[in-house]
Every structure is written in structure tokens, then in C-alpha cells.
Length: 218
Ligand code: GRF
Image 1 (cartoon, protein in one colour):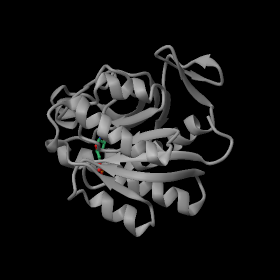
Image 2 (spheres, protein in one colour):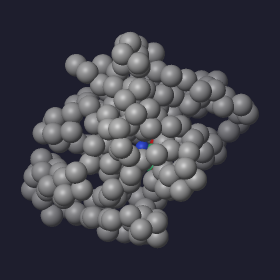
Image 3 (cartoon, rainbow, N blue to C red):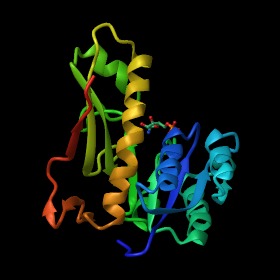
Image 4 (tube, rainbow, N blue to C red):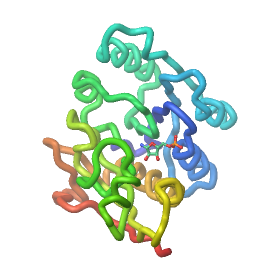
């Protein structure tokens, strides 16, 4: 991607703890992204306060004011494009994206999903992993395509599920992993070390058929 600091817009709908991890990593200098804007579809998203406190421009458009998904997405993109973002980071942005939006930013949208994709796309991932008797669980940073939670995977963080652990406890531990891996994965894309072409991810020009994986000790 760019040689200068990659202009990165972060899209949120809620708490924005992942957004905070990007803000903190930029502040400490361990990633080198220019967070050019934070966009929300909800005015009450706490992440907007986090952004304002960090001096990052914010924008909010209420999706309920639009007749169709694509109409909202076009308005969102018109707002986002004022900041000329090179990369879009979905961080708890609770909207399914229209094909138009995905194509508009093709290969430049990242998402983090709280499961070891392709396991457990969709919602309620922690409980589903526990109910299945899985011994491991994790979270995945992936490129966004038109298939929900189906784009090529970049980086996964994995940990062991503890005996008797609740979905809530597991969620907290998974979120701590997300805060470590998501900024790192975004930097790989910003630096051009990981790229997207024809629906696939590449690392240093080679197909990345298995995502990079970091195991987190208990
Ligand atoms: C994250 O846990 C992520 O897995 C999911 O949405 C959650 C957002 O949390 N996509 P936060 O708003 O970053 O705290």
C-alpha cells in the first residue's frame, strides 16, 4: 500500500475497545498508521468519545434514516471519502455491507471476527465453541468480501478454552487477543506485506492459504 503513513478509517458501532487498541499502538509508536477518521452508524457509540479524546475526526450517520442498505452505504462512503482513506478497519461495525460498498473499497476493508474462521461465522461464536466442546478458540482478521465473514484470512490469535469457562469469560480473553493482533494485521496490509488480489490474500507475493497464527499461552 502506501509508503507514507497509511490513511486508515475505523468503523465502529459500539464500545470501540479495538479502536482504542489502534489509538494506543499509534501513540506508543508500535504501529505507524494515520487514523484519519472514525465513523459510526450510532451516535451513542462510546468509541466516538475515545476518538474525540485522541483528537481524531469523527463522523456519524444513522442507518435508520435510509430506505435501503445500499443507500446508507453510499452516504457512508461519501462521508468516508472526504478523508481519502486507503484502508478501512471494521471494529465492531454492526452492519452487513452491501456489495456496492465492498466493491467501492475492494481489497481495502479489514474485519475482525471472534472465531477461528472458517469456524463459526455469524453471531454467538463463544457459546457455539463451548457448546461444541472445542478445546481451542480464537479470533481472525480477514479481508472483507461480499460473503459475510467469508473473506480471505490474514492473522488468527488462538487460545485454549478453560474447563468450565463461560462465554462471557471467554469473550473477555478473546477481546484481549484481538487488541494485540488487529493493529498488527492492519500494519501488515498497510505496509503491503499482505495484499488482496482476485479474492485471495498474499503474503510477500505468495498465496496465504492458511492465515498467520499466534498462539496465546494461558
Ligand atoms: C469485537 O470483539 C469483534 O470481534 C467484533 O465486535 C467486537 C467489537 O468490540 N467484530 P469493540 O467495540 O471493539 O469493543
